[in-house]
Image (cartoon, rainbow, N blue to C red):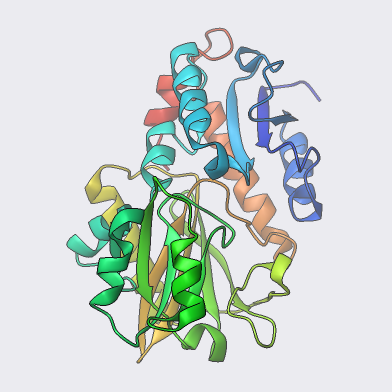
Length: 309
């Protein structure tokens, strides 16, 4: 089969080959004549101009090298190499201040306050005896995340040890994450694909697999779907209506779906549990790449960035 497009699959140095969850996606792309090449996002030896686009996948350390990540996006923009998702959307989604924007647009989110490290003590002092979660505004995978009760000596010491020069989210701990699970709804090209519910290991609150969390397929109800789609409509109203993939993470509290995060950079897509989902995503990516212009590699950036489904 002839090659119709060359697609870089961006990963991190710790994940030089993609895992089983992405294997079906790579195969589905190849069946459509798209040549995927896995590249480490911050490897200086990579010539990104060789590719028609860069699909952001397992760059699971970008928040640890945030300035370099933003510089990399700027460099790709200058070189005319489009990213999927679009670089403007990646920048917006990389900082969880966006939760405040969603709330301003009427989206139900976990109540969130944001403070820099110097102001954390004052923010927490106004929340005596509250069970809270603290996480950096730029983070992932429960990195530098704390949960505990304000006023507890051990928790207060841990707060003082958080890295300085960062902004932090302060949120109430939502016990339904432990008792009922955290929902993840996957959308490809703006259309719902599939969902899973994630649960932490016994005695933990983190749902990530590296902490013993698990995930199983689930069919969301109409109200949950409607809440997720209101969040995506708000993102469009903010100015980021075009996305190839997004994972809407949330929890149902008192019968209402509340958004915890929108994962638009490097979400685990749970393709292994839904074999047809890899085909859906590959089909959407092929349509995007097919809309690029016929100029040399990288010159189709404007066409891909402007594409809608």
